[in-house]
Image 1 (cartoon, rainbow, N blue to C red):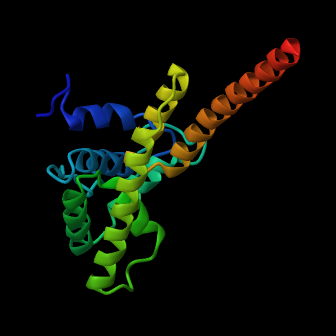
Image 2: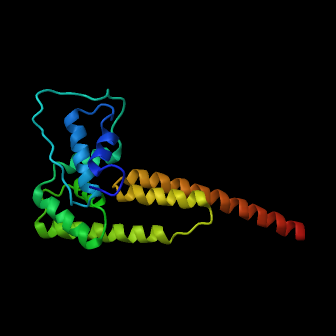
Image 3: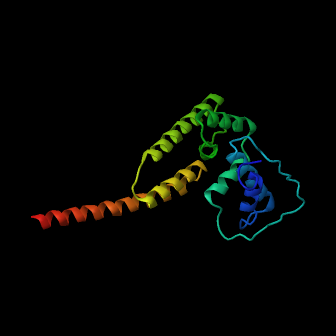
Amino acid sequence: DGTGQNSPFTTALTKYLGTDGLEIRSVLTLVQQEVYDLSRGKQLPYVESGLPKLFFAAAAKQQLPERERLLLAMADVTPEMRGEVEQVASDADMPLAPLYGVLISSDASHLSADSLNARLREAADAFVKVRGEMRTLASDDPQVTELRRQAEEQLSLGAFDGARAILAKAADIDNVSRNALKANFVNRTLSEA
């Protein structure tokens, strides 16, 4: 299954198996949630959680990246909330991860079903708006265009900090170009005078 050379499961397994400091059950949970997220809820691989003892595929070196922390947290969402996220994401034609990011970052366990739905729909509307704005931002600089594409990809994966950092790089490049153009304009104007 899948459109690439490997199935989504195999792709995710090769991506996460060597993740530093993760116990194998956490690796399998990352794989499960990655496939679930990227298939927009169409696939949810079964993961056997009855392994007899802790097993680490690699030693810990640093804190997990934002995306991996989100995927692990997604595994603990109730089936009811999972269904709600899937429905809102489907209605908005958007990835699941940004909605899970909102759900997990704001303790939604105390919300009524209607309040949860409203919060998710508000987040979906905001995501669609930001995604649309990012697509309309044009640049003649191919480096800035590539950075904006990368930021949009990070946003769709729920890696908000990563998206912000990439957009900041793009803004810095634009700012340097703008200042260079301004200095050139001033120099040319003075030379004409």
